[in-house]
Length: 489
Ligand code: ADP
Image (cartoon, rainbow, N blue to C red; front, side, top):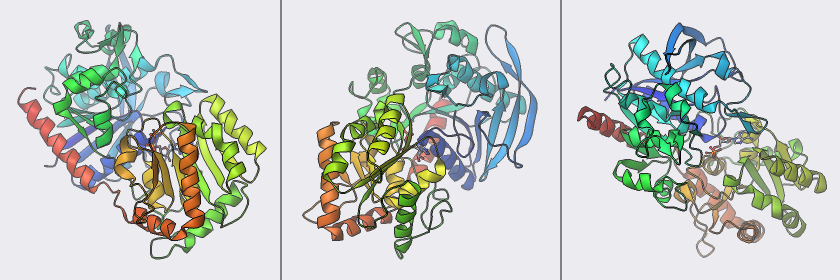
């Protein structure tokens, strides 16, 4: 079925990206557009978005009808994204800022209003342009009020029949604000109740979205199970069990145009399973760029990550000194986030020159170079809804060392010393000891069983992480949502 799909998302690569959400929205949109669907992605035009020649003003008099009788004028820019169309919302009061969600570590205090505005503007754009989607696909808490609006204020509008699919990329961030934001969004205050938008006396945008959407997805099967438990449910596990019949875990695919060692223009040399010589050049270039000792023999452990508790890199910060003192390994890290973690990795770089090198910041080119130039890739996440980096690393022949959680379980197969099978190293406990021992295991495999390393590399690089199967599953969810909505659900 050639559907009309509207994505509402706070991020869309390459225009804006803070993490995997930006990659996923962009690649799934391109994929469905390629298959013949009419896909538009509604997302803010932040100050950081590069204005290219391909970007054209699409509407300059969009009236955004907020609650309390407030009406604002905004503009919408259009840019091609493969065969899909990105619609970038220009509204300087909210989006002409350097960060997407925060700046210098502090969240913008009006994030509730900013993203309520994004939702309302997306739906008002549909009404004013007459483009009525079959499915509104909402991404994370920022888009949580869209399904609520579709079920309430806009139920009797031409959008009232649209199905909504809500994707949980990360349950930890729920968009909790004062209830005044609900009124500002133009949602009836009768929705401020515990079986809709209210939680613990505040507005919870994620909860509102989860209650009101037609179907729910999350980004891996294991995470879909985990979030139904108190340990991973971030207080919403009861609701997710309640809506369990409508919740599906679908693994994110990888955008192979952006991430492919055979064609990647950001790395020192291209390579493939058939000819791996370029990988050695990439390692050499990475060691040079990051000031690590030039040596093909020493294994490089790469990291590209947000530096927050979720990612478990505080564990690495605690053991890095001991690791490089007792094992002949190198650590190449790219990341930004919590100030103490940034400081810790900078201090380690100064204390262990040539062995540890951290670049604090966000740098897409270096991210590609680390994937290509490292031998192992570290992701000791406390939880990981899907995780893209472990997939990139396997595609680039860098063996993942991961904690067994969420999407990491669904993508990384444990190495077996007995058979040499598997494509990565997994551990269970989120502790320094478990991480230390697992890095030690990877290191001893590197030095003592190089044949197994080669075999694992080949196994990881042969895996199919493309959108193929996952897109088929999303297509079924869209159909299922449209059928349910037509049945009045
Ligand atoms: P999450 O979405 O939780 O941050 P994922 O592994 O799903 O984690 O996706 C992270 C994405 O963001 C990847 O594409 C990764 O390369 C990118 N990324 C994360 N931190 C940085 C950084 N400091 N510089 C460049 N890219 C980064």
